[in-house]
Image 1 (cartoon, rainbow, N blue to C red):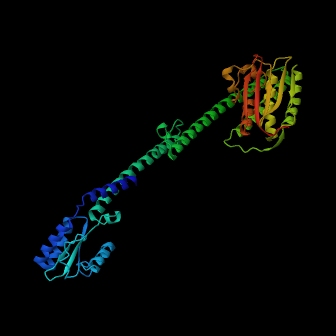
Image 2 (image 1 turned 45 degrees about the vertical axis):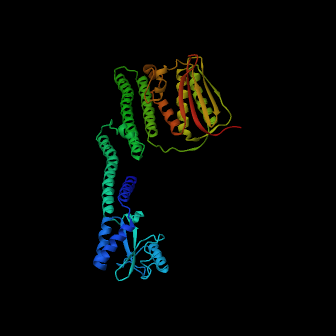
Image 3 (image 1 turned 180 degrees about the vertical axis):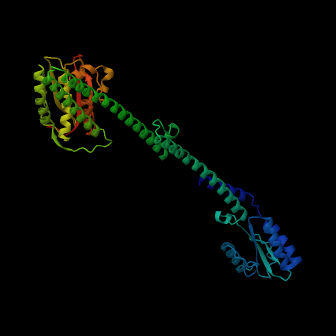
Length: 439
């Protein structure tokens, strides 16, 4: 639109610059000659010739009644001036020749041989943009400019919009066909308009889809491996039980133990699968974290005492949060039992509950071997083990901490693990939104 307006202004300026100025006295002399030679018919032909010669001007020959000789409508300012001339007696046949060269006259007078007095008036047709657009040549040029510029701009705009859309369509089809590396690319995602936002969202979606599929594939591989282990031990126990003179009671106990491990593993896998949904719908109810943590610690003390270990719990008054009691119990219990499993014999697992700002902070620290720095973040991945053989012997399957991390995450919290500064153990910290902070 700006280009069209500029083009229109340029055409108007050029057209106005072509308008010649008029010497009214010269016109009066020409009109007098034509009037003397061809009377009124010759004067009419002269008006056409003069208007053709002076493009952009309308020439009027006004008689003593104040009207145009050809009956055309005149601008109001010219009508008013003609009236003043008539009232002043300039158009009087008896005074015409006597006052023809009066210096006060703005328009020259001409006199017909029969004594009729006329005055010559000129009016520019290009005083305003609307009058300018009445000119046929101006209308044609402006229309051509408007169509050309609008067509070019619309074509560029269409290309600007359609190119990324076509590329996005191609990337979407490629992703749908199974190419998980399909991306729109930085050329379009750097754009600042809505298409750039759409391109960035598509790339983010494609990245998440690839991550989810890769994670699911890794989870399936790990599940198949984990399920094979107890099944293999079950087959070994069955094989030993079939031998002649086998200790059937011992083998049946072993089969029962492996069946329980298999049942626990399947339950944890199902729980993790539900928690790993894109937007899991989980219940939210008021919880007393202090009471919940006390119950978990009391249950874990039995296992710790049997292994000649201790659990020390330091509460911080009543701390409340919102969530599902069963999920919170499972998340915290997984960390506590993991700490009891790896803390050294004769040492204590310390559990502390505190509040910082609007966050409840649970820290579970053991006195075990710790975790290598490069693997601290990976311990929350499903089926990941720092020391696989030791973890399996201790009863772990590498899925408990993954459940903990996911439960804390879906309820708006965070979980972190770091080695103790003295190098004798691991601290796992769970942060959850607190709904009540003691005064």
